[in-house]
Length: 330
Image 1 (cartoon, one colour):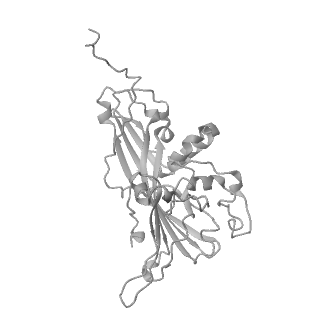
Image 2: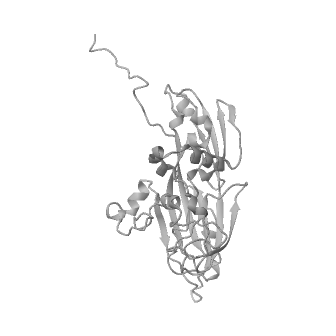
Image 3: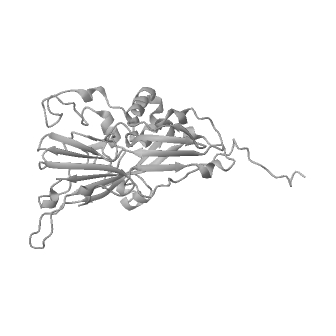
């Protein structure tokens, strides 16, 4: 009788990693919808406190907004370090709505990323540092607000500085992303990851890396082709914990038969910044469809815009693998 007995695993001893895709196929509208219907109809107990969003992001940098007129830079874009993410990947989410079994639980409130960043800064400690790199988080240091008239190293006089010399948090956040040669953004030339794994393999593994690095071209009047801007694109695998988005998921106990519908409104922003050969001189941001925030931040690096040709940098970030900015498409 014992040999013929059916063995049942305890639901609290057997753990499974469940995944579900969002229902969105085009991300040019800046929204995503996730429904947990398939998970709520089974007998599994789900731990939403440990749940997270795995979001592919594409950051696109181009030089000179007037590139189509034939005055584009012809070299490789030197601004790879000049744009990073603010505080964490939470800056991509402008607002959310949550319905539970048909009942609204969370209403839409814009610019929740600022509140969520405040929660991270006041709740995280050095003991939880092992989770910082997946969520793209590292706190800015106090010295980032220092002032200096040395424009090549610090920000211009009267403006806060943002560079790797003062802001350790900025350097650490950039270190979560790989460049085209497989090196990390830490200035160590010898750490070539491409000796171990190729850039093609990195893209298949969904690892953050520079996915496109193309030099610009000049105006060819004979052939009738316009000058093109150099471009650098890096694909970022962003992890956003549900408990970091809203306290609802932080206090949610292990439960089953819960049908969530989560609609996420992404920050679709484009920033255009102008600089001379030593400092940023102006910048403007554009927000799509609704008021939001800019997930990207401008940085001052000696090996970035310093000694580069004066011009305009245009940066955008979108969910998915496609840049939807019309200017950068050209």
